[in-house]
Image (cartoon, rainbow, N blue to C red):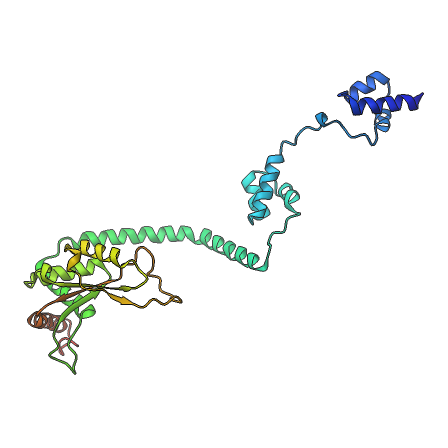
Length: 286
């Protein structure tokens, strides 16, 4: 009799939506007896409720495959580290040795950034305050100051006569800083030169956008781009370690003053005066 009842319980469990409670009530047996009768019979699909954390588990696996550590995963999805570990322990942390090295390097950078970021913020704030104070102190630059500054920057960045060619006195200035270029133009204008008659030429690496750089410099100095001479192109080295590449790189602008021997003499004299004023009696050095 019990075998027949057991077989009927197993059939009902497999073919109907009857729950364990309903089967126990129908057959009048204990929970242990019904469990023994139904051993090996899979539970109907309707009794298998979805796990509320299935989405979190899937997200944890996804993060692990992206290379995140267990603490990072736990923090991102809001579960305990032990739970996150159980969910992803079957997945290797590093697919290759190169990946492990890259992960450790990235971790070291994150730790360093977290440690030094407050110090950098303080430093940058002090730098901004200092720059703003000094900028405000400068104010307007008078004619005398322009002549002295212009002579100094020219003697640093401009072409000069050499001891073996003392009469080669041509004023040519080159720089990549637009502020210095504009200071030089203001300097020579105060000495009687017209920027529209000056000669402009770009010196730039051949891998850069030469036409765009020429247009940019023409706008800076306030002349038409067709006043520029043919650019001097520097050969590109694919193995370069230069950092001045990309969009901000616009090369150097060469500004030449035609028929500038007397202008050169004046600059030479200004620089000699600066040398004497600073205590050097030998005058300007070539």
